[in-house]
Length: 212
Image (cartoon, rainbow, N blue to C red; front, top):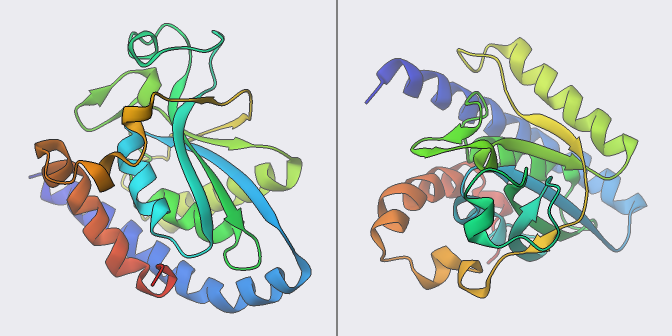
């Protein structure tokens, strides 16, 4: 284990935990002015690892794994895995703006992967595993930029954050066997050794935001 890297990742998680706790009151005020559902699409490596925590977050209505950011219509998983389509493995999150804010979703996003890695997460390597925030309007773009700037300035990570901020394009839903993967296949080795540690950290950091 790279203890130095673990130290910086732990610091980042602590910072994001504090931001999440401090965000609760701001969420309440913001949500009084908002109503209905909104959509967020992000990519952070294997979509199985990203789908699982968001599915447990209070205020999240639905989560789907799929592909975004590429140039080929209706790509298959096998084609995306070649890294030639430009797509990232992404998750599309529908959330209730009366319950959870965009900022809180961003805090979860940065806590469940290492945004300093370029075109990879761990052993998953390629542009399809890049870290991306797909924005749908200028407000979302500015919020994402500000959060990245804040994290970089804090020194929470030893390296510069490599997360891309890209305009949202068509979202192609992945094959059925990719949906709810951790929930259905939790005993599989990848789930136990890769996803479960991420989930343990997420659940501890955001315990006040989880579904009952």
